[in-house]
Image 1 (cartoon, helix red, strand yellow):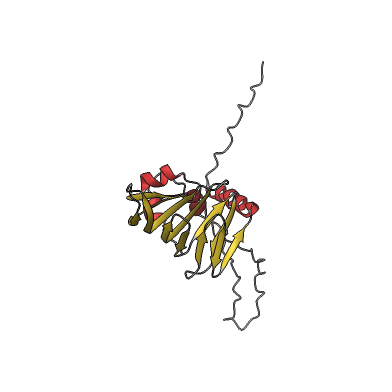
Image 2 (cartoon, rainbow, N blue to C red; image 1 turned 120 degrees about the vertical axis):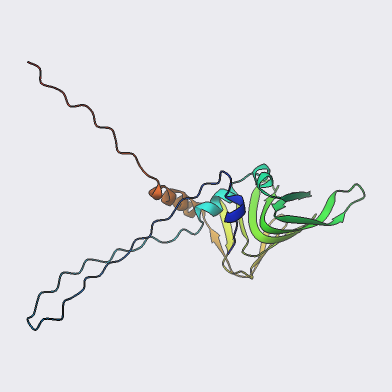
Amino acid sequence: MMCFLPSFLKSSVTMRAWAVLGVTGALASCGSPKEEASPSEEPAIAAAPAPKVSMAEWSLLEMSFDEAKALSPQHAEVGQYRVAGDSVEVLKKDDEGKALKVKAKGHVFVEINLPDRATALCDEATISIDEAMLYGGPIMMQSSRVAKSSSESTAFRITDHLRVQGRFEMIKPEDLMQTILASTDAMPIAAPAEAPKPTASR
C-alpha cells in the first residue's frame, strides 16, 4: 500500500498506535499418571477489527494544499488540480509558461477543486487540464466518503467524477467516524482528582 508516513508525518500530522488484543489459551497438564483437573479455559476475546481508513491516512487526506506544499519538495497547479510530491515534472506548458501536464512521484498529494473539494493520495500521478490519473495504491476522499484501492494495480481517473480501474472499496462516513473514535483508545486518560475528605469538627 502507500508509504506516505516517512515524509508527510514529520510535521504536525497525528499518529496513534492501535491496540491489539491477544487470545490466551489454558494448557492442560499431562505428565503425571494421576489425573489432574485441567484449569478451566478462558473465553476467547475477539480482536477489534482493523479500521478501513487509518488515522494517518485520514489525517493526510484532511490536509490543505498549503500544508502538503510545505511538506513536499515540489508542487504544481494544473487547471482544477493542485499536486505536491517528492518530484513533480512539468511535461507540457502553454505559451505563458503555465503547466498543462505534469507527472508526480513519491508521497503524492492531490487536491481537486470540485464544487465539493476532494483530496487524494498515491505513489504516482499524471495530471493534465482534463484529468488526473492516480497509480500506486490511490485513495480519495470527498464529503467524508473515501474510495480506497484494494490492489496495487488499481488506478483512479478523476475528472468531474471518479472512475476506477481495478479493485477498490467505498468507505462510508460512519466508518471514518469509527476510525477517529478508535484512535482515542490509545490516548492516556488522567485519573480524576480526588476531592479532599471532610475533617470532623470538634
